[in-house]
Length: 264
Ligand SMILES: N[C@@H](CCC(=O)N[C@@H](CS)C(=O)NCC(=O)O)C(=O)O
Image (tube, rainbow, N blue to C red):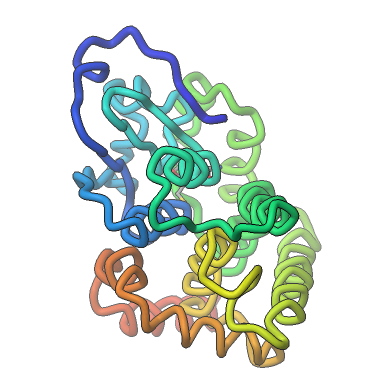
């Protein structure tokens, strides 16, 4: 569980649900959608990743890894999007985002945790590697290396700066196809991934679809996934958890990214 112990009196005295997040971050999207689906009253704290606000001392007290999202809920800090989703489900039980059947609950949790497990090696590797961007400069890396306790993250950012080893981005794309093929199969005879209503499994994966689609990832062979996304887009939580927070206009960013890719 991403529960973070703190002695900080200000944090401990905070009332209500505070979400620290960034607009285009897919991990933030799944936490925002969960809060919206549960009709929670939450206070937004936007963290500007470009300005590296996530690495400022005050934020490292909330999440020592300097990642968004994080929440402070009545003074309790929770980090890691999958853990936050499960925490919110456990604390704010209605409406439930888990099926009734215990076996299906385990399946939902598997999908939620998978989203987190593959985030760095698959989704982020594909996103950064295919566009050819790095969020940290050489100079940033010197500082980052010292403050980041997670060595896998340091290695990832170093690779995004130096260029990913051959085949790594291609393998990430293949794995994305594999996962969405599995989701596609699940959606063959049903609207939602597990059970007959929207669950944390859908919420865990819709942000990846949204982000990858924006980057032009070829989803054409995953027809059921496309139908599922269309259905999800109708939900107010999609607008309030994804669309509302995207830098505007999204189509402009899409075109710029594609052009960048063409000339890289
Ligand atoms: N395992 C984390 C990953 C969170 C993550 O990678 N967040 C990104 C945005 S999507 C971030 O904060 N990046 C800032 C950085 O790497 O400096 C989770 O699921 O919450």
